[in-house]
Amino acid sequence: MSSPTAGTIKKGVLSQQEYLAPLPIPTGEKPVDMVNMIWRKNDIFLDIGNFNVGGFMVLWFSALFYLALGLGFKNISPEGSTFTLLLGLVVVGIPSLVFIHNLSRPTPLPIRFNRQRREVCVPREEGEYWIVPWETVTAAASQHSSVSQAGKTTSGMLFISFDNPDPLASENNKHWMWGFNCGGNEAAMSTWECIRSYMEIGPHAIPKCNNFERSRANLKGRGIVWGICCEYAQGIWKHLRDGEVGEAIWLILGIFFFGAPVAFMLQTWKLSPPPTLDYPEIIEWSKPLPPEQWAKRSEALEAAIIQREAELLARAQA
Image 1: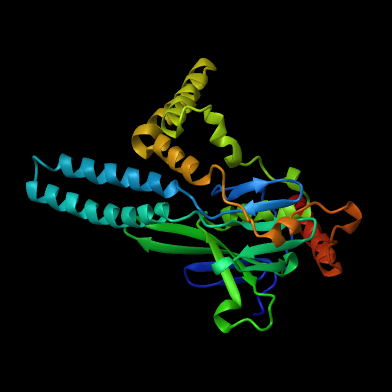
Image 2 (image 1 turned 90 degrees about the horizontal axis):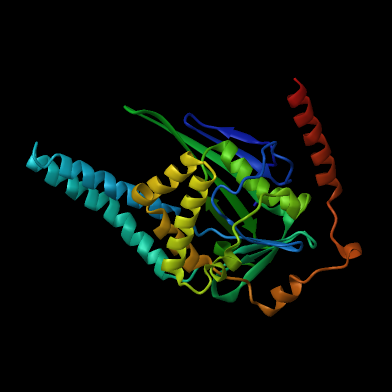
């Protein structure tokens, strides 16, 4: 499957899709892990996962909204109150069932980006995996807008797709795509820049990530529920002690409006430690190489990066 090259923009009436790779040239945005996708990072590889419990906070807030609205109409319009509560049960209940189902399933394996080999390990079904050259990975920032009585709303995603290197693969096993719901084009670029900067610059070029591997151990044997509650309370107290009242208020509001401690419990339960790729061949593939054996950029990518950096510099000076 031939993909548009980086920099290609496809526009629709209420949509826009901008290709960020191949070739993986700088986006001009700072690397920011918008969706906690970085599960494991070291000098050899970067594990990227797509399991986010942030949806729980949305469900919590939505449930409170419909509950407050329904109870508020109880004395004014009993019929309206009943309708609102039933509507909330449908709007919140169905996504909640889907969320609970996803929680009950094993955590999906991460995709591993090996910067020393400049290759990507893509786990597939039934123990299969692909080893894909880094420079063939396709990334696109997709943005869609909708207009209603409330005004214009914009949402966006980052799509990363991989091609099966096996030329004899069946038609339904030739391509695979991952999507991250991270906001508009700039947010998608910042999310992609985490991966691109790691592969092209190094682990120091991307922001500090959540230490999923050690977060459960950091609870000091107190258990997930009690340990998370204690850490959350300690965070509030620390902000108050340091005079950061605004940050402390946000944490307190997070308890009531977003169920933040419960979300952190679920995250710790599912991602501490995060799953790893335990195939014997991939364990060997993930071992460090002597620097002289590290794979190099292609000449095409080198030239494309130089050109892109010159464009970004000229734009900044304009």
